[in-house]
Image 1: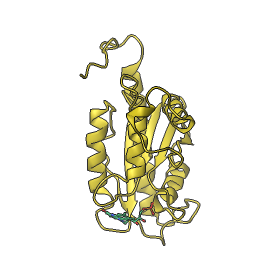
Image 2 (image 1 turned 90 degrees about the vertical axis):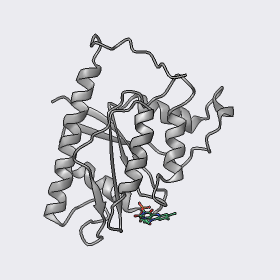
Image 3 (image 1 turned 135 degrees about the vertical axis):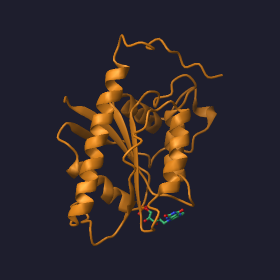
Image 4 (image 1 turned 45 degrees about the horizontal axis):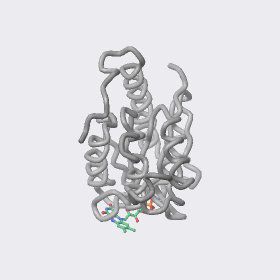
Length: 200
Ligand code: FNR
């Protein structure tokens, strides 16, 4: 397999984010063929259509980073049974201006950690709805709802629990295969290549 550039979002702005720890673990356990670059969301203003004529620098950088990525990985907490506002705001920026949805056809993965038992399942369900609307193919299986136990994870992403490490390794391996599959279907000359962004 060739090397793929993966842009990843951490959906938390917390300095002690367990999802940031999870993102470090995923990068450590990922196959060698994936190269990771974080797509920062912290400095984005709240999106308004008023910006469409002239996006501010952090939003231009966000869209360029998505465009430069072969695949996107979302590593996010669940806030009040949904997507954290900072992450949803970033997705809204990436989807606009109209006709320049940066997520279209990008292979995506969604994973998240919570101290609670359902491990961000409801947030992920909301994300799937958003990403479907944005025409972003998603890794459907395996699902990855991580109940975060601080004893299993070091701050730099070392995973002490071997069965958790094996699950995360498997997830990233499946994610790599999925990105490869989507890119091969998206390759120039494939049937459907002329498909316009036809929503009205
Ligand atoms: C939470 N938390 C939470 N957890 C969960 O499993 N489901 C939920 O709906 C929520 N809702 C929620 C709302 C808000 C505003 C906060 C601040 C927290 C708890 C959350 O999982 C926990 O704080 C994690 O540590 C957040 O992830 P990061 O920021 O540490 O990556």
